[in-house]
Length: 212
Image (cartoon, rainbow, N blue to C red):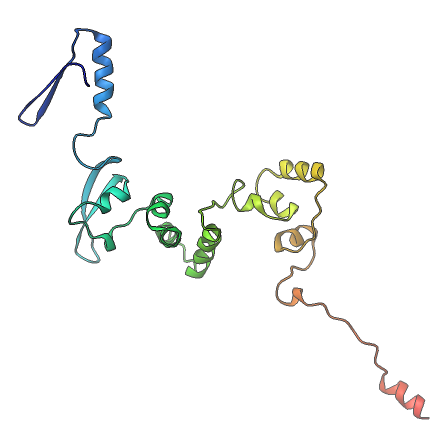
């Protein structure tokens, strides 16, 4: 946009290229589409919605730029939120990202009419953020990092995990739940976590024989 003439007429901005070239005009058009004249970069539009529960008007944006929004004068920082988990982590920290995961997961489940105990959702959020960074639940994240070969193979790309484990000579000690279910053993939880040994004690009949 450095070459050419730029002028305004009311609410209209008129750009005139330096040369009468269709190619230059096309380039100028592409540049103007990505140009931010006013507002926050990354936010395409904003919709005002009245909440039924609180009777308050809330601004919902298409796109997000949490750091810049929080710098706008008049914005209530304590009541501003984003569903961009990584952006929340970079701006407010991993604890805020954990809370965002819990809130967003709860909303999705509520919209589907599913009643899931909040403690299960909190456990998933803790697992995703325990390392200080956000990790996904999937073969490229937590599920793909499990120590057990069978547990990794049970979650997608089964053949790949089994081949890699065979090439590396990995062993599975069957300490988790998934791998024990696969091989048909008791899971190491509850009564399955206890080993019972029967002692050899003499019976009453044997005692009477010894006394006689």
